[in-house]
Length: 75
Image (cartoon, rainbow, N blue to C red; front, side, top):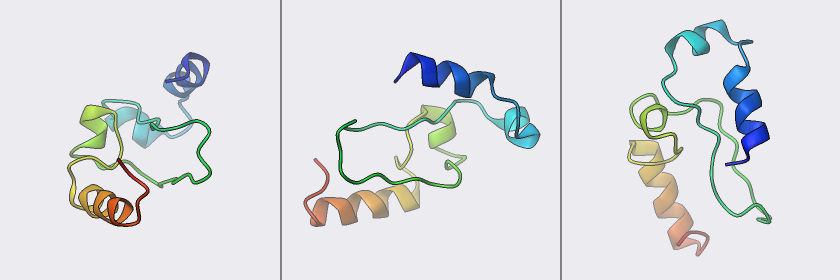
């Protein structure tokens, strides 16, 4: 995780409701040279907010990972 970006995100208090309820900053992961990037509106409260990794074990994450694997876009 990029330290400067992570530091800026962790200090941001623009979204009061989010700041009051979040446990973990969910920045993302992957190849910084990738030609495709997925941006989501909100991290899954049950998984991503706990692990800090989006698209993990929640239903939408499992579906996305399945689709990406079938397209040959995921390891």
